[in-house]
Image 1 (tube, one colour):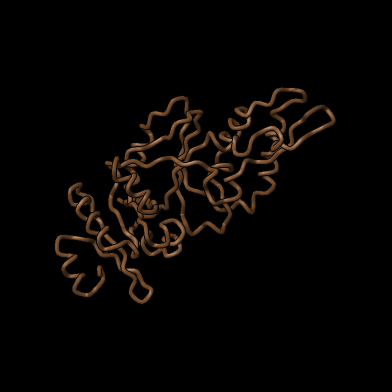
Image 2 (cartoon, rainbow, N blue to C red):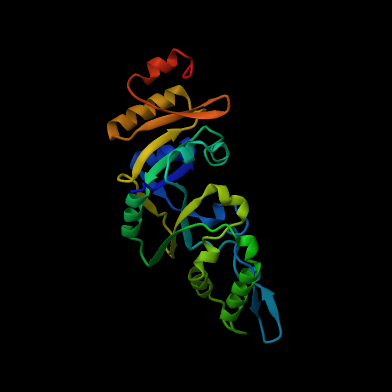
Length: 263
């Protein structure tokens, strides 16, 4: 049976929060780095039978994306995929000063499906990297958004976000081809809740991989934590530009100190 794994890159500040409660927090689309999804869709709204105005006039910036929360991972069958990605380390793990959390996808799916969130809808999917081929589909979806609001009718943002959820493959799970190498898998929640949403990863956390710029002292601390919790901790050592993953154990530091890796 193929083992499906999720990789979540973060900085050490984020890791400290994760380790305290072994939870991950769902983020906002406004904090993503993709211009298609970190801004609201733009469409026309009928002011009268003959006059239309841009949707940005009627909605505060970000209000249409705000009800959607997400957790982003890379998806692979092997751990090698996650630690052999220098660009991912640089962009999402504080320029190799952070870590990559490896999770068991089957166990994480169970936790997500069981997650209680008041008045919410949940969905999960791979990300599709063909947005550049869907300009007509985006335009059609925006016309559908325009049709929701009749002339002289009060503009209801929930009508708009409901349709965005209905078309979630486009609005939540589609990006440009430029992002394809990330092999992203997403967990999304459509909710009116204002509080932060967390998910427990106690059962699904499989391993912690540390970037090569994480200090030796921090590596020792995290190894001790992992040993107590029964979670392997490893770090990446780049040898002539090629990554080597070293799983830490009781004798690792003595051996590696002798060659200067932790000094």
